[in-house]
Image (cartoon, rainbow, N blue to C red):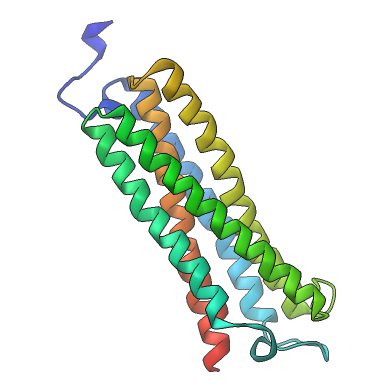
Length: 201
């Protein structure tokens, strides 16, 4: 068994199985890029079709969007710190930054749900117009991914507490880190092309 472990590599890459799993996850992220690319393309086609409903200028408020952005981008930084502590074989530091990351992610989801509720009270639902349909589907898909990431990472934390830092738990931690950074990148595109572009147009 030891012959199959390359201790010169980071813990999550030390076994062939881990390397294959990480490669497989990169391929999965490629499929996710196609999914979000399709949603962005749909939004770009439908974003000006208001059907007499509210427009972005009437709905969007920069303050709430900035709070969501700060929370999610900060969570990307703390996820990076978690991976750094993993590379230092510091399980407690890893778990600490992991938990902080998830709290920031939960805060993002809370503010996004609050934003959606506000829109509905303003008469803006996903059936109001093509613009709002594409908007809610795009942001709802991203928010669902963040929520799933929180649940997934929670299970990884439980495994870290039970099994410690091993090549397997390190691989799972690294993969959820990739997933989390991917969602942050998607949000940067949402913030730029959905919110900012509509506010200044």
